Image (tube, rainbow, N blue to C red):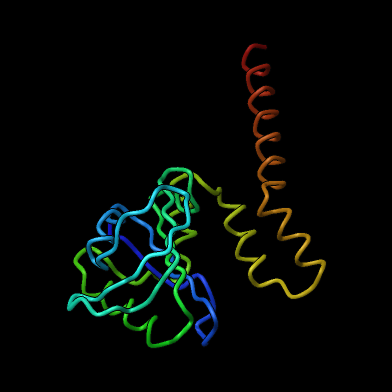
Length: 170
């Protein structure tokens, strides 16, 4: 499976942008951008270089080893300066690297679902949360994202299994 990357922040110019990368080839990133590897879950400031050893940016790098991540895979976050040219350079280098590709819309959530980090109702709750515009929508979607509906469904499932076992015994 490819290692995917995408912006985890706005696509507009800003002070900081976050590029999130998820997949098995995370360990290649320090070589791709010529920086010293970082310790897991520790923010480290690193100079990022292109293939011709030209500096692209000074970025905050955070490595999250799987499976306890947002996708259940190894994840790396690059907190770069918010210039669109810096972001384009980063995407260009990653896109040209074998085994890396831009994430499809919703693919991080899909991987979280496939890796058991989120169940289907939580993934739907996350979608609703992202699209919520009112306080009521926010409350309902946050509840679903946190697993309230999942807990209720699992409770009903256990009740049905118990009742079926009693019925079978009778």
